[in-house]
Length: 401
Image (tube, rainbow, N blue to C red; front, top):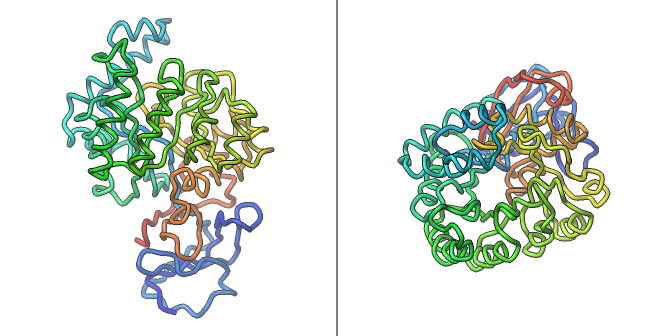
């Protein structure tokens, strides 16, 4: 059997379903052909393989390339001064009245060109790539006008042309209320549904639609309208839900067969059960929990007992999670949310890809998947969760290259 590249003498954490734990295989090999996995498993059980290029991994571990399934990677400006003000005692409301908060990021993002947005996002993306990320989700939501939202999404798409990484783009027009619509949230949602979503879909700029269902965001009724418009445009949905209060957003998202519901600190058992029945992934974001000094963690025990898949992501954004390390996110998930090593690692591979609707393409080492690999200088996969501020990546492979 001919293959382009054969990685031999490796230990595999395949993350495949039907195998115990992380799907670990000793004495493993991975073969790729035309950017896809031709074989992944034990060398002893492998068919005869004729490779153009052979890589000896010297006993290193191979995992699927990592998946960061929730980021706001494209924005302009900085919120570091606001962080400093909060440390000095200023409230969020005081900062917002002074022109800070999301309005500050919105103004800077609207003023930036598409190329400027790309250039500012690339260092953040490069940092994630250097830790083995091969698939990343990027949301809009800092433009809050048709022109600026399209610009953000075009910049997100452009990142995939500038770096060897798979970019899944998400339209998040229902992120916050822009100043020109103050006092008229329904009017803004009219525009999101009637103008923005059709334009985004027509240009093929988004792979899904998101919204912020919260007392400081949009109501469940308004989010329902957004989801109905997304459905009409043929786009799957996901939701920022139950971060600050329980508005039953996860249950609403489940009714639309959402790919994921994210944050979930105030999720109740009714919402968990709805997610389980609809196959919705719970995406947990410990970076925001840490940065905002929250004290109510997501209901991990309920998610486990109902069998809801758990994903982890950086939530990289300028206001509440300026985090560009998925490895640190793993440690935060274990330390702050008491997730197991297995839950953490599945959260940035198999379950992360599921949260993006890409489970048939990425997230596991299985035949037919894209050949996205992370090769690690570690003795045990637990080191990827245990270590802080240490990057043991030896090599990264994207689509067989």
